[in-house]
Amino acid sequence: MRYPVLFPLLALPLPAIAAIERHPAQCAALWSGVVALADANPGIFEEMPNARQLAEDFTRMAGPKAEERIAHETPDYALIAKAALLQKDRLSREIFDEIAEDCAWVED
Image (cartoon, rainbow, N blue to C red; front, side):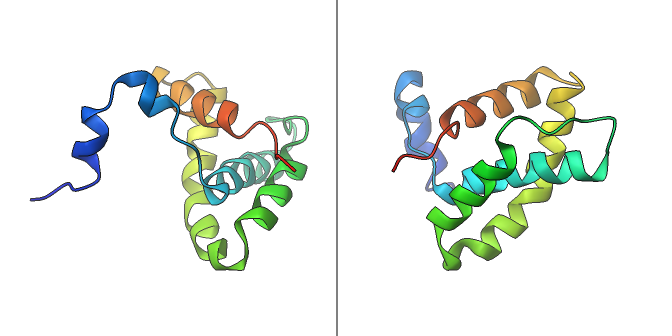
């Protein structure tokens, strides 16, 4: 079994891994997942400020070729957001916080 992408990442020091730039499609999927979670659970999860706008902005930035990727990843990010917000596990919280921090704004 080969892991061509994983091994180079493991060789990087941790700060270098954290400095990897996120693709706009990943950011769009994260914020779309947050919006989907809030929409599916009114009264339980309140939408994070600007989540809908960030989802739209990153989707536009990712372009039409990324629509399938965003649609595919959005449910996964909704689950991660749910686990993070319910404080179900530390790993989900760390993943959510790290990606949300990287995807906190759209650069013009």
